[in-house]
Length: 175
Picture: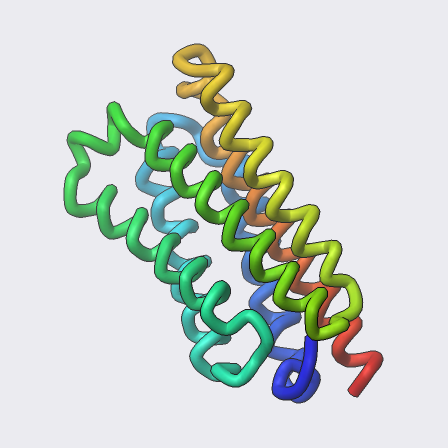
């Protein structure tokens, strides 16, 4: 993390902690309640990411962070706007979200690598995990649709939050 990132490392840690806590909550979501609760977790994570990104608008990877937050918020809004579709199409929406989030996280990591940020590889690993989770959904459908979606989103949130915390703590050390 460079420049303004160093001065806002506490905000990054807060975002990471929120994402990890949301991920832990997603592990325990039963499927019947799962879609609504998982979408709320996605919305809260997206809003948290949006706020921290806007506050640190000069930070490395700003556009990728903003795109990631808007993607999470958009998926949540789509599910809330079309709840009937969500019951059938949620696995596909989650798969699309994870694939796009994986690409965005990898691009974000590469931006940080170009800026010689430390621990950029944490975000790269998070992006690769997201892509692998999308593949797991594709390979496992329809058998995994009933039990795996909350768990898969939990892994996404925990890895993303952990990567954010790791990069923030590295920025603190440089500050």
